[in-house]
Image (cartoon, rainbow, N blue to C red; front, side):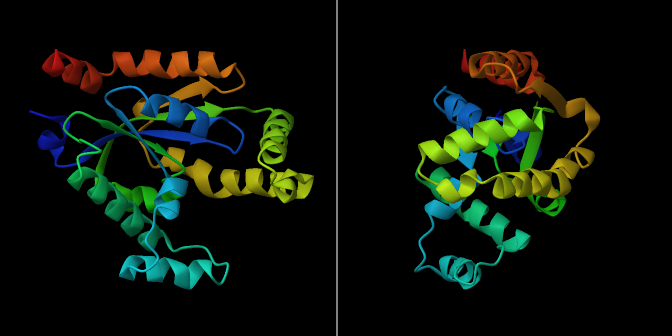
Amino acid sequence: MSAEDVSGKLPAFVLLGAPGSGKGTQGKVLGTIPRFFHCACGDVFRSLDTRSPLGQEFVKYSSRGELVPDELTIRLWKARIDNLRDSSVYKPDIDFLVLDGIPRNVRQAEILDDFIEVHQVFRLSCPDRAELARRMRKRALKENRFDDASEEVIQRRIAAYEAETLPILGFYPADIICQIDASQPPVKVLSDVIGRILQLPAYQKLERRMA
């Protein structure tokens, strides 16, 4: 019996961290390992068919430069996951979802709770804001997004994370939150994340079933 069969929800891990903490990097690497399926919020929007009814709803907000409402964001995410599931790209009976950039706030976490069972929240913590800013500036310049390299934009993004996303930690039980030092080299961060996953009963149960 799969983890999904037990609760009716999709088994998942959540990567939580400020811009520059490396959650996107960790999510992508985990997604290359069997039994993990990486789903970034940005991928959901980029894969959207803007000709579909849902796509038209998204365009209505994005074309005006407005934030997409939380309910619509989760509907878009659910449609994306259902499509991947129907095409067997994502197999919830043997894959753990690795969520990156979603949920973005407490309301999204509340809505998602109807669909996913979060086995672990990995908080990638880097208290040194100067280090976060350095990483964000380096990435923006590397990707030729020069406007995103300005100090004003960087500090605004960090402040938005602290005000909107960090409170998610209060939504999930304290015993499923794992603090990871994101100031370490990426390979050490990955080692800490995987080391914790290997200890989780849900993962150990899946490994026994797949052996």
